[in-house]
Length: 416
Image (cartoon, rainbow, N blue to C red):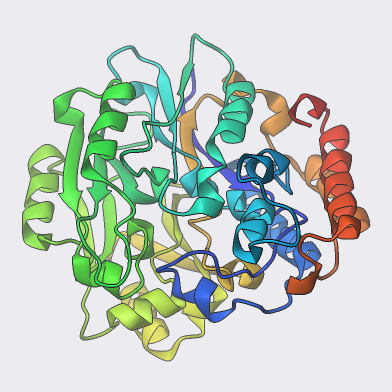
């Protein structure tokens, strides 16, 4: 069994819009009410996937969830003439950020030698709390082989869980036993701490992690208050490397010491606030990046164009590349439509260490399939959505038909 890291990116759905539903997500709030461009958004996301394929990496995808979500509207007794914010929640395309789909513990870490995936309940935000049942249906299809995978329902909603956005894995190599770092919050000023410590501990138990493979650390309240609504806005890890902002954790030195005690080969790259402030890190999404091991063993950081174009962030990155650190390449990508709604390259992907042959091949991407997906998006995704269109029968018909066309093209109509 050849275990590799597979990034499963969310295909951005045809109802992608800017309703500003995510409290604590500054980009989402700042762009609320703007016209969105679902076709451009989906094509930007697909281009990022193609970029990773061209690097020689395994690439998968997850599909948009059914929107508008009539079950959600019916459960609230809503129709179009009532609460516009809840109506918009039923149309949200936020499942595109698959870092929040689940928390993944690969087979080398678990007591039963299987890869475990626990869906995130996302209860802090109404527009996301409705996602997990449909996410589980999709995960159960993609990772159906019981010899290799176990998919779990979300933990009870009394404890908020935001999935892999608050979870990092460090290891000597992807196929070796690793250390899984669960980051929870306690407070964030005016903004909610979305990841509950007890949710993280429950996920670790469900995922069959022995105590020596799990570490629980607190996110810095100042980071949450500054707009780091998930840990992946201020830190990202890959194999032996942790790339983090100085103010990501409540007890940074204690966190680093605990990591090194469990993984002596760990390399911790800390970006000081004197070079890149929390505000700069969050506005540029420097850390909401994909830190990847390329086929030649070199590490690359896939960042949003906004980070590359930010003068202070760029100066720090140039200095890093001029040194002899573990991150040897920085690769900017254009995901501006996602960024405007508060999600960078890291938000758009769920990392799964597995044998690609064990995954349902319908969820794996290749060049030919990317072209087929592109054709469906070009033909069916709305070019633009104005906020006033949300809830209209015409747009409902259009986004429903677009998703069905994609399911039919990929032979996944059981998800209709």
